[in-house]
Amino acid sequence: MTAQAPASTGLFGAFRGSPDSWSRRVWRRFARHRVAFASLVLLAFISAAVTAAPLLTQHSPIEFVGATEAAPTWEHPLGTDRLGRDVWARLVYGGRVSISVGIVAVAISIAITIVLGSISGYYGGWLDMLIMRFTDVMMVFPGLILIMVVVSVIGPSIYNVMVVIGILGWTGTTRLLRGQILSVREWDFVTAARCVGATNRQIMFRHILPNALAPLLVAATFGVAGAILTEAGLSYLGLGVLPPAPSWGSMLNGAQSIYILENFWWLWLPPGVAIFVTVLAINFLGDGLRDALDPRMSLEK
Image 1 (tube, rainbow, N blue to C red):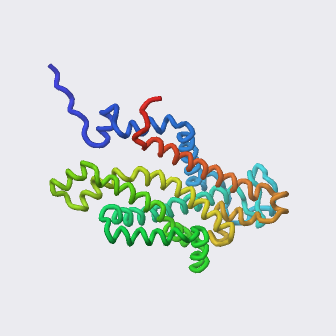
Image 2: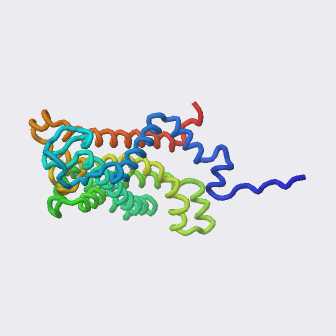
Image 3: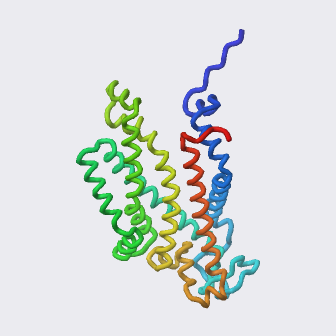
């Protein structure tokens, strides 16, 4: 009689050993969302392209490389801008800036959300009232206008844009997380954890937060898209990334006249398409994650 192999343990063991594990169910739901899956592949390609920018172009994004406003050629696939800089080089290097702004800004806002939303939802009482009333006050102000005012006061730069968008972008996600925690904290397993003597910290970080973060993850994907658009808008208005550093928004800033729009499409169309495709792919990815993480979704079609 042969000995039976020990069962797999741990997270990866559960993933391999259980055909109906949570990870497999989520992946199956996400993979069936073909548009979201294609968006994930597209975003991976865009991220790889901007990361490998030095390998995709031999030109610097800030140096003069040829005639000004030259049409696309084999040497310069997207032509040159008004200062004789290679537009393709600025596009791939600028993608680094735009995507970095989106990721860092959302990371800051999510960190604030987890702190404020957890305290408000779990403890309730006067802390909940204080945090929610402050959140309501912050939501009264138009977000883009407030960001523009703060950036104009402290000065435009890539780091200031990241911090300002992150610090002022937590209100909606905080209300979302608070609502999730208010629901999860009443579930039976949380009551059982209290009965066996678990501390508030253990209950929050081991039991409540892991079960309340799924909607926050979906909101974070949409937040990255919103932060990219906000940076593009600020840079277009001259309040974002400072020249000569490239970003997709700052590239659009140089194409504000009708003359350029009509005669030099390569100055504004590539960054515009890059913003459009990236933001659309992130939104589709968020839709797919929302459907995949929804426990009410059926496993099979």
